[in-house]
Amino acid sequence: MKRHRVVIVGGGFGGLAAAKALRPADVEVTLVDRQAHHLFQPLLYQVATGVLSQGSIAPPLRDVLRHQRNVEVVLAEVDGVDLERRSVDCRLLDRAWSLPYDSLIVAAGSAQSYFGRDEFGLHAPGMKTVDDALEVRGRIFGAFELAELEEDPVRRAALLTFVVVGAGPTGVEMAGQIAELSRHSLRSNFRRIDTAAARIVLVDGMPRILPSFDERLARRAAAKLERMGVEIRTASLVTGMDEESVELRSAAGEVERLPALTKVWSAGVQASLLGRDLAAQAGVEPTRAGRVPVLADCTLPGHPEVFVIGDLMELGGLPGLAEVAIQSGRHAATAIRRRLDGDAEPRPFRYRDLGSLAAVSRYYAIGERRGVRIWGAAGWLVWLVVHLMFLTGFKNRVSALFQWMISFFGRSRPERTITAQQVFARTAREPA
Image 1 (tube, rainbow, N blue to C red):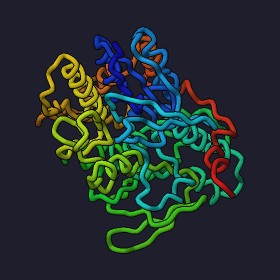
Image 2: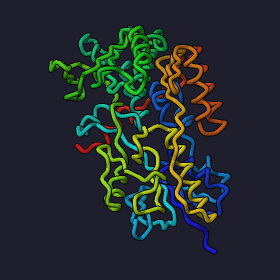
Image 3: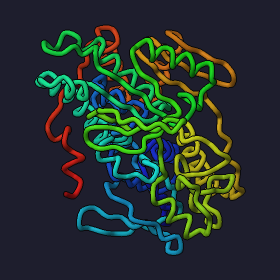
Image 4: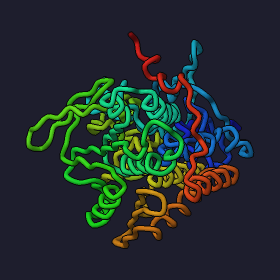
């Protein structure tokens, strides 16, 4: 008898959780991902600032799933899904093929959003991929190297100005790490510049930083950042950007051009374009961010064999968090297993909120769960334990812990290698 075929699109938190949960099932699982590694996205900023190596947070999917005999990993770009034929269209270089499925789990995730100003991406890389993190690392450390050689004080000041756009957890963590880097880790590395004079500007259009956190915690985080030397510009919109500067407009309508060669974008996300294709075929309207409205059991309306999970699904306003993806991935896998056992009754997905954490600097983090708030060193210890638990594989946990010990206790940055390819990667990819 032919086994049930399950295709999973995406090897992120949701897709990997679904694949692992299908281990006991009598099914054939094909996991399709365009990168072939599982990325722990919340720690990309530490790769960008020299704390962690990319290997510590991006283990190969084939290695993670090597003992699960009912899973096949396929490196490919998914061009589309044909709901009528029940097939997934794949492409790799000049080869194209289709994967048939009996059940489909779409966990394609999200990408960086520039709110309609995609040209900003050339000058301000996001923080969504390993390529992004390595390029940001090249730009940050490259800026200090160029500043060391610069004779013009105005140009040197622009080189030593770092603008982080978006004051959510990623933006706050990135700004804090650049401040730590310039004030401590690099202090004795240069002879002609004072790295502590670097200017770090955190910009957001909202009235305060960390809008998803309790306001009192956000105020504590803002105060800590300011003590570290970070300038916080809330209620400020980025209206222009080029290689040399950023244009900001305040709530009062005042426009300021800020000379800065290094910019990092963490202001917004948009769902994978695959979601809009699925929504169009199912006859539903995607959200403004491209997320697909799903039924209570995470299935696509009219297509109970298709599960849309994680950042791609719109269900009761659930946030695009790793834990939402993991839990919805497990839910989809459990639903498939129940169906194969003869239980076709749909069961609603119930999300268990495990709280939120953000590391402002070493030894200082904030967190909250169900009204319980924590901050400072206690919050940092919780952050450390939680992130170690979420990392995939024992080897990665040991590697990350060792690198954290070097960075947090010795102030050094073990991962500072940069290349010209990293620094100019995005420019090289763009057409002239």
